[in-house]
Image 1 (tube, rainbow, N blue to C red):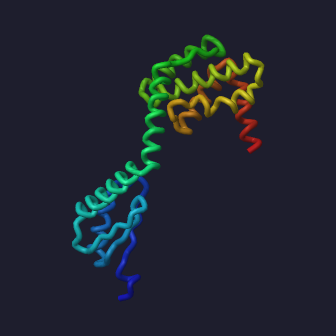
Image 2: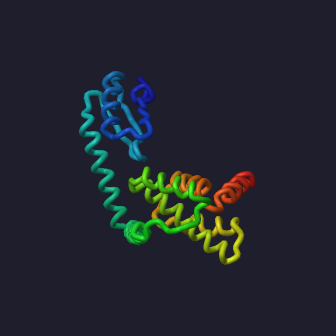
Image 3: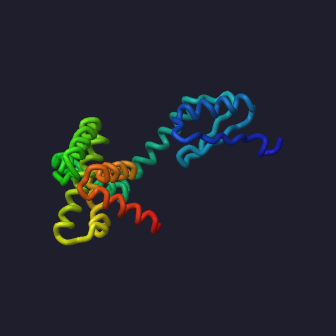
Length: 198
């Protein structure tokens, strides 16, 4: 047999847990009678016929912990920890600040906002609504200062993200504002124009 015939490559699927991957590798090794290799989170794993999946998973976990510990003790890791601590403080302040007031399109829009707020009481939903309200309030301040909506959108869209929200959450917040904010229709047109310009 050649080297290519004695090694089989296993490709873990996205989201697969190490214990699942290790079991699949051992099963494949037993079925083929060949060594099985895989890259799991940039780490090379090997399984021999008759191997033990728990040992593979334990060795992987130990190697990942050593790597994480080395990173935490590095200058880069210490800097990232300090930055994460600062972000956590800012996020806690934003949470304590709550929902900032902004102008609704009308009473129906305000009722829709309140319903959405009540239906999204989890941390994820509340952070999305806080972001939306903060974004609207900051844009309103810029509009009162004489800025155009396009400039207000550009200046505030990312600046108001004090909690580290995801792109999906920001997209949801934008759609919420398009539906309820006094300038929602203009915001929608502005975003569509930006998208068209590419």
